[in-house]
Image (cartoon, rainbow, N blue to C red; front, side):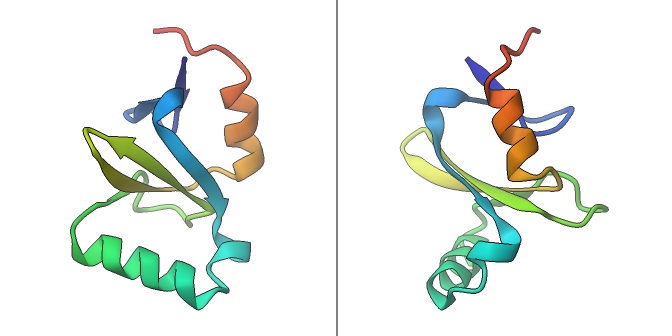
Length: 87
């Protein structure tokens, strides 16, 4: 199965490490450090740079982790994950 993060970004469900709410998780200094390190290593993809980010998804692709910043809520992504994506 696949999860659609935006019109252009679709990821395999089995590659998802986690989906996290920006408001609740970025309070932690560890999460902020993780995101900062990922950004410095150019592993961050902003799915929709013109919209306010609500979640970030950590995806394991080809042996390394990539972080997708997404304007959709974690609840919306959960609903999408429970509905099969059709090409």
